[in-house]
Image 1: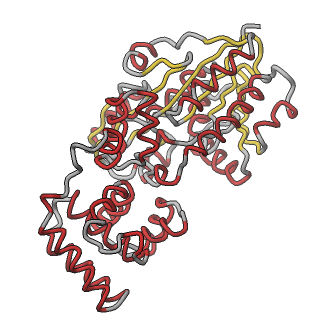
Image 2 (image 1 turned 180 degrees about the horizontal axis):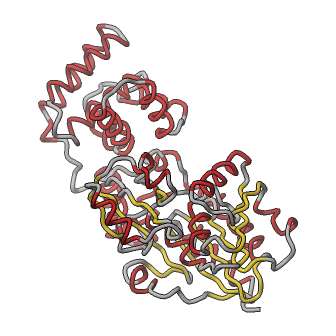
Image 3 (image 1 turned 30 degrees about the vertical axis):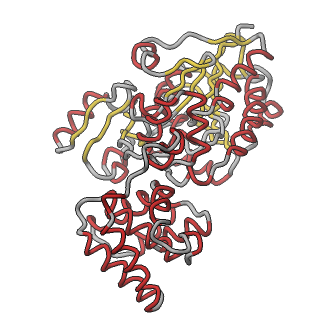
Length: 441
């Protein structure tokens, strides 16, 4: 309840707050899992919970004290979406908390609201006759503006699928450090250790771990054999296709997942300049490179727009611009995103992306590759940026995919503006856009 209240009142990040609260608590593994489910689930289903609660709260949820609103949302989430917690236990726990935190009047109101909910539980259904966008917004708990936007860009069926899949828990996927071990060998080790692990069908470097706990606490992680990375994100370094001995620039590198993947693909031969705007993130990249045994990565700090001033023109064989973006492709991992982002945010960031790709292009050698990627599904941030760039820079053209990419990725994903757009429902991975451009002269 405290975490949810702080997230709402202070726009704090739920993952950071929750981790901090769990660290300070003495909950066992099962209760830690339940607390995590309750925080992320309640945030994920926010507008649906409020829609139903407003039927039972006389003045509406917006008028309640923030902690009372959090408590009711949290309780209704358990009643509507979880099946292992007895309903009487949900009500009694909520009443106890409201007595401790508030007074008799509040606990009476909480008790009354939740008992009314239980009596009318069968009627908590989103009306079928609502306009399509509004129905999807409430059924799958997404802001209406975002649903309408995705309908416009991808059609009704795809928009509904995006919203539905965004509420499913993300897979645990790891990338194999092929400078140390093959995927087959690591899969055999995981199987021998009793893990339920299968090869990723999307990335030749990925493994999906269906059960096995937190992979960051394993020996494989400590020894640098794996990195934790989403399958869609693994495709970016593959599209850059860096070769041993090349000079590579990663313009916006932190936290270093794609940078280190490129280092592995280059067999740690050559140099990767890993630039990021924030000095403290340079340490993150350096720490990952060290853990993975990669000496070819050189972390630097600076504004990506200033990189052409810091380096000679056409200095790099490969340039990756994994651009800052609205992040709407990773809602499964960060459910607060859908409630904090606005349509205005998308417009503002698209302008910055246009400037960044123009700056990055100056540093690509003739014959070299520029790869543009984002973890979003917004046309303005993706094909809009690439199409605008290609129209203004005739020395660049769309480059064909690496071997095997077509069959694995494009046949199911969407081809947009010369790039590939992955939606969350295509592979149950993050929403991602990747475009691969060759400088021909």
